[in-house]
Image 1 (cartoon, one colour):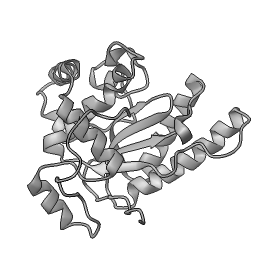
Image 2 (image 1 turned 90 degrees about the vertical axis):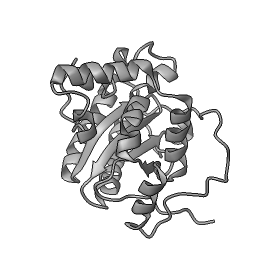
Image 3 (image 1 turned 90 degrees about the horizontal axis):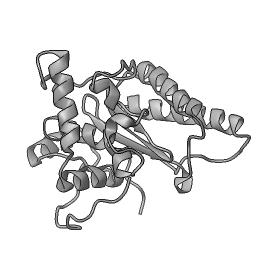
Length: 232
């Protein structure tokens, strides 16, 4: 069966994930992480994509981003992917592919899932057992939202501004949200949606979204029951 085209609609938040081939490491040094962040910053601006949240793990990365155009995220990911592979192969004296095929992505309903998806992304290192708290991990957007550094890559979504009337109140509210974690059901929903490519949201959101694209945006809920989240 042919693969469905990626679901991409301007003005909607997209959860994006890219893995290393066979889940192999895609970073070897701190300079590699810095290079990927620099490339994301450069090409997000060129492609008119607002990046709200990110985490760079040893063998994959996640983004939460809103494009201004239907081609914004594909253009950004293609440019970043190609340039990073050339860089990584050169400094590691290697050849061949680095990525596990196409990146994965889905749309999420901002009002229902945006903050949960941000927390999900920032908590990746905790779930992986490489950090006790999100604040201990340097390669994510958490430190920006917690007020501990300024990250020029980040463009906060309007939903984030609703967390408080001052920077301090927003930072404290977001830190508390991440500290409390997300529910198992939310974790399953966010994981499955990005792996499967189906839109994540309530029925009215999905129905409205379907009017904006010819590509199917969801699958019947009669499928696989909710269970243990897969590791991403």
